[in-house]
Length: 292
Image: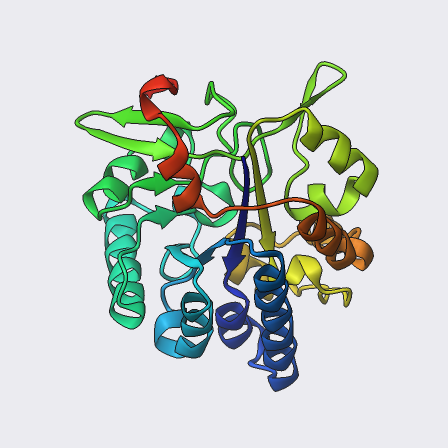
């Protein structure tokens, strides 16, 4: 089972944090067209986790995705880190995002992914809120440590049922591979860009379940600019020290040159499904139950 997913926020981030440059919108539009056309040729479906405000400010983006037969999930309303929100703030953000997307595309929103995989041990109440808002499938768990999120205490790297108080939700986590006895993320973000194609193929050949995740910016060769202290703190809600900004710049840009060609090769060699298709094919009675 190879699941393909994209986190879609670039148009919103460009407008609210980068100055609304028309050439960037054109670049994003062109790459989205490439993704949709390539998926159509390979007869693959993907889940596009979209920021809710895109439905208001860039509705044509969501319509193009939905009209091409792909699943549109929620990626929060304003791309805020869940681990920097209160329970009440997240509840309102989730409600608005689901409502805006559903009103635009006329379909139920069943899947969710938190920005930066920012659901973890300290805010696992988020699963209750997702279930309350009709979310059936969550893809927010990154079962390892990472700088902006992660859930290293999560005990499963395969699709699992997550029970939090009175609510149960189906979790399809990111799946690190085992390499020399260690858990190694490889299927998205900077990890995907750094791991060579031959190793991707080797890892995939030994795994029954893989969750790939991409951003539009992951696939653009042009480097993102070095952020000012103010820009960094406004966006990441972290101290904009020189060290933090350099670290983020390197992680954002490293290995971008060959990412699109690498994805193109994988799409040509493997069959992919979206989150909903994967979830409907799973016998959930046989999957682990994680009680939080």
